[in-house]
Amino acid sequence: MIIFSNVNALKTYRRYELRTHGSDVIFTSVLRVNMAASMVSQAALRGLQLSSSKHLFLDKFKGSRLSSRRWLNLQEYQSKKLMEQSGVAVQRFYVADTASEALEAAKRLNAKEIVLKAQILAGGRGKGVFDSGLKGGVHLTKDPTVVGDLAKKMLGFNLSTKQTPKEGVKVKTVMVAEALDITRETYFAILMDRSCNGPVMVGSPQGGMDIEEVAASTPELIFKEVIDIFEGVREDQALRMASNLGFKGPLERQAADQIKKLYDLFLKVDATQVEVNPLGETPEGQVVCFDAKINFDDNAEFRQKAVFAMDDMSESDPTESEAAKWDLKYIGLDGNIACFVNGAGLAMATCDIIDLHGGKPANFLDLGGGVQERQVYEAFKLLTADPKVEAILVNIFGGIVNCAIIANGITKACRELELKVPLVVRLEGTNVQEAKRILAESGLPITSAENLDDAAKKAVAAIKK
Image 1 (cartoon, rainbow, N blue to C red):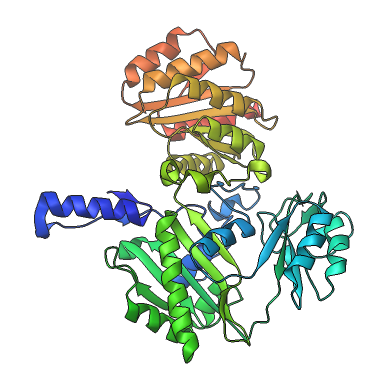
Image 2 (cartoon, rainbow, N blue to C red; image 1 turned 135 degrees about the vertical axis):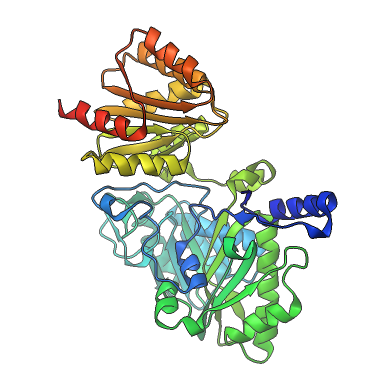
């Protein structure tokens, strides 16, 4: 199975297949949807009601706090800048880091009404609360002189919403924007869809609300257009989607043009998703993208350096950020058994079987492929730094990973870090006999396991001693 995460990669493969195998090629590729892509739009696409995207594991993990894998996630103003650069209609706005800058920006806008928005990587800002006492991370005012006072109560203070930790997230930047009246709100998204082997437009005339609720209660109001990766968004498709979204007269043409520009942006930045909610119309007869979320293909970072340079890591979990430096993927949970694996699927299976035997995973740390000894060592440093970890379970299936490299990394880490917690290791696959020999001759207190079930039992038993 070949997995593609963006249109440019898919196009390249399709062209290669057609050149080398001719028109009789059977195209069986599917598309990987970025883990951070909104499950909401996926719900709309399929007419399914899905739970929050934070619930990545089985229901049995409801007691665990899951820090979802953080791919590139831009602040609202950064996404709007990208849209503006692609000719997409957005509100006029400025960004401020101080209260005086916010006040100056409000005056410069010279707008009838101004909206001041705290910039953090979390939803529910409007209903959030600051530890300064200010209620709401989004404020509307017709008096630009009060913007400075509001910004003083936002900047440098923590904002708590339904999507932040209890202590909230410190606000370092605010967006000062022109507030526009919205006559009508619609929903529009472009995303990669595995069932269609390519990008798909999804829209609904019912915007400005949770789109999964619309999909569940009124699925007939969800419209879908499959995009040909070579033709792009056709004129008739854009006009049909605009009509389905309820735009009339000249607004239909405006909306169609915005749709085509959003697809151009989708391609230009190697996005896996561009979601606009709401795509609205104003009393003055404008079609405007009032809010947007863009998800990016991390595999395209090498050619999207300017975009990825905007990544604000200050809100990231420090352990996740450190893991990313070594090309490791870390997800924190609330248990006490660390899971050291290669591959997200294997990680979830490992977490699942630990739970089955009465244990609780503390995290999972994914080595991925092409791993080197230094990465194994750094992985152990991250795991042992977590005070919750009472045992470590290593579960490696060596395909492109050489088990001997893993074994050498494990023994090095155990000696240099003076490992104090029980360590259970299950290795299988490439060069596994050499790996087992390395572990056996190390003289270290490492418990070997024959299979995953055996490994989970031994890890759970180790913390109960």
